Amino acid sequence: MSALTLGSLFDGIGVFPLAASRCGIRPLWASEIEKAPVSITRRHFPDMTHLGDITKLDGGAIPPVHILTFGSPCQNLSQIGRREGLTGAKSSLFFQAIRIISEMREATNHLFPVIAVWENVMGAFSSNDRMDFRAVLSAFTDAEVPMPPSGRWGNAGMVRGRCPDIAWRLMDAQYWAEPRLARRQRIFLVADFGGRRTPEILFKPRPMRSLSQTGADRGLSPAPGDRGSFLDPGGRIPVVRPFQCYRMRTAAKERSREVFQNSFGLSTGPFPTLLAGGVSPFAFWYEDDPANGCVRFPTELESERLMGLPEGWTKYSADGTEISPTNRYKALGNAIALPCADYIMAGIREAITRE
Image (cartoon, rainbow, N blue to C red):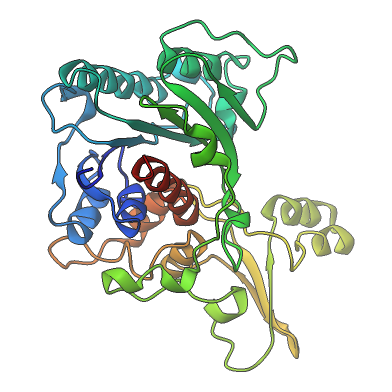
């Protein structure tokens, strides 16, 4: 078989291409319209073609690829958004990706893509009275997919008996790397147009790739250590806890010391999900000096580490100028956690090359 290739729609900062390249898969092209993410990926993947606006693409005219990935906009599906669902202006772009897949398969006599991967927020299970996820499954299979008897979508499932073979799984990034990353619950759906390999790709146990390896193959520093190490304690014992602002505000109104103390999460708890609209603070102090502790936001570098990305992945544009902190935070808040993408790309490569 010729070298496996990947195309990435709604590419963002190139996490799927990064995971693919780490598994020996060649990123061939990407589609993204945000200027800062495009410039970041141009720096890291100078040979990857950028195709621009997805709505202007013809799937039959662009280079065919073995693997097509897309994390379509989630704003209308997210539980923190207005929840217009797949009819919303942003999330309806999902159907543009389905159109491109269909056009590519028609133009290649149904040979490409072999695998498609869709990623989105957990809210897609419940938006529009749970009908949006049903619409996603029906769009992939070109058939009416019934609701499950329970009326709720499970965190993992399959649709079999048609082409493509489909499986999905809810993955939380905090459990997919050692040390733990930020909490990030995302649906990953795999559609196999060439066989029935989705269970192997999405459910087969595989070793987690060490974060110490994430930057070495691209000349970047790795994402190291745990919370203590990324705060560089200099030998002193740090205490790092998530901080819940809404409880602090309640404590201030009620003048309650107990409620304020409850604003501090457990030291074993995960960092909150990084959001495109803003990052969540955390509390930090040294064990021998709690009085001089502070509540602060993670830096851009720390946010990269919390996503399992190489240090400095979002720091520079293609021409070497620095990306603004605002654009870096936004890009990271929209990104995919690298260890989850790693797991899926490793499964795809293993399944396809074995045959």
